[in-house]
Amino acid sequence: MNQSPSTEQDPSTPAVASAARPAHPYRAFAMRAGLGVAVVAVLLWHFDARPIFRILSRERPAYFAAAVALYLAGQALSAYRWQILSALLKVHGRYCEFLAYTFVCMFTNLFVPGLLGGDAARSVYLGRRHGRMGEAIASVVADRGVGLISLFWLAAIAAMFLNFA
Image (cartoon, rainbow, N blue to C red; front, side, top):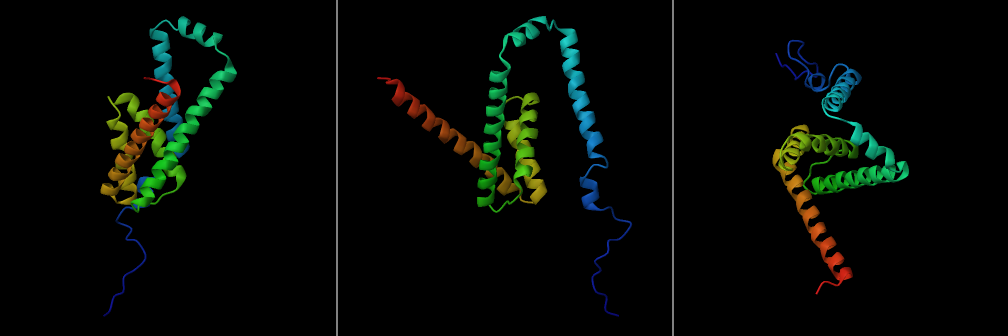
C-alpha cells in the first residue's frame, strides 16, 4: 500500500509554531514592564532620588523629547542598516523583526559587560529564527564594521572643520 506524506501533524508531537509564541503576549509584556518598574522603584527607594528629580525638573521637556526622538531615530536607522546587510547574506526578514532585536539587545547590553553580549544576542535571535547562524553572525559583525568605518569618517570630517594641525 502506497502511503503519501500527510500534511496533518501528528497530535502527539508538539507544534513548533505554538511553542515559539507565548500563550498571552500582553500578559508577558505586562510582567516584564512591571518587573522593570519594580526594579526602578526599589532603586529609587533605596537611594536618595531627590537630586535626580531636582535635575530633571530643571530640564526643558522639549529638549528632552528631542534627544529621545533623535536616539530612537538613530536606533531605527541602525536596525534598517542591519536589515540591508543581512539581506546581502541571504537572511531576509521584516523590518519590525530587526527593530525588535535591536531594542532587545540594547536592553541586554545594560546587564552584560561590553557590547558583545548584545551582539551575541542579536546573532542568536536572528540565526535561530532563520536557521542561518553563520550568516547572522556575519551580518552583526558587518554592521559593527560599517559603524566603525562611519565613525572614522565622522572623525575625519570633524577634524577637517576644526583645523587640527
